[in-house]
View 1: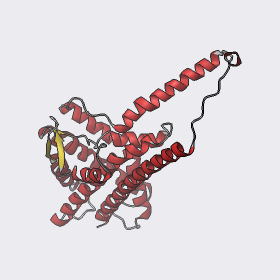
View 2 (view 1 turned 30 degrees about the horizontal axis):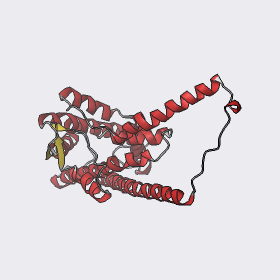
View 3 (view 1 turned 90 degrees about the vertical axis):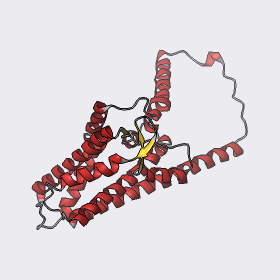
Length: 277
């Protein structure tokens, strides 16, 4: 029951973060539009004052500073925003490419940090009678099992099932549609996916991969209820959690576009969403 409650908690937090991303995206768009409208109406056109050429002295330092500023601006407007928006996959991934993607997702620092944080919270809030134990030994058991869960999930969903079903393991955003349609689109991607050739198909990786990884995890999760009902509940909670992550993947890059690209941490979150896991 404790494991199931932890999964429900993760799913709930994911959905909350996804909903927050949607609300923040809508708020930022409205604020930007209103600000541009007000500025356009309130500010009269002003002619640029003439500046004498003699008043501007030549400086190598000024030239270098100008070049650096231009490079930073091009980087922010080009490469960084391209990473945030997540460019479309030009060619489908083969078996080796999907395996590398699975390894990359598993070893992502944010993924490891989130798993460590969740393990730490579970250890701190558990009772002394917990099957995992307390203190650092309990944290180590939780963290090790959680990382094993991540490894099996990536192996089955991102690599094995996607390869056998010829399914594209990426999440593809739909930034050109309205907010409502994008919400429906993001939530529906746990059922409808894309084939390697770009055609819509049933999301075998989500359902078959999640089921396979859950069955394997049952072999070493000694603390879990392994009844059919409990296993089914964990599978559907995991699928619901993935639907919440789809919301994050869909809207977080839009929020990041309105932020200063030099906020490294926020850019990292946006780039992770744009990886279309």
